[in-house]
Length: 295
Image (cartoon, rainbow, N blue to C red; front, side, top):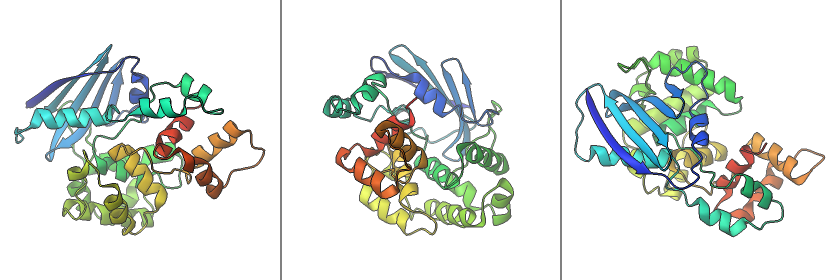
């Protein structure tokens, strides 16, 4: 086993519960385990089963990665730190958003109550993309169940006992029956296999884009795939690359919270939600995260 480690400074009033709750979605804890302030997550590192540990303390995150194997150690600790910083939302300039809109007539109470809110990001852009495809037009609980079955069917397990979220290369060799038995529809099966193959063949170099995402290029590349529309693209940009300006007007929960915020008697249309969010560019996705977090 190989272990990589690093420590990361956390800002004052860091909202660690947002991070922990994001990874607490699966009550069966197949691939993520939360114990107090510790997150343990199974993932593949250079194709090898690994267990990421994030211990969130006052002012500091202690990060370690136990790998079942011997990876290429060149810049390994640096790569781990970059991944952990993205996952913790530390690349997001949320203070600028709060400063710009903290006096907004409707948003001021919301931003004050949720000051410092950051968007938890997936360990890899591919994990975010596969989750976005999984969650298209179904409930979160249904998506969590399908995701769990997919991870179990992929079958990579770390020595800690946690299963590892598959990477693109591993998913690309699954067949349609594997995905459909995990609960994917035929359409989502086609989309996920196509995307996995393109990522595995470096036609979609998602990992290369992780730290400095060329947003327009990513949008154009994803839009070429069958079964991927604006919501999936913008959600992937948010959860995979911490891009805070994708308009999530197509998200049902965002529209419901906007109805609540605005006191609307009728349902809000996607077009109306898009118009309302537009003036908040370049923070539209971060605003959506604040709406998700509303009581």
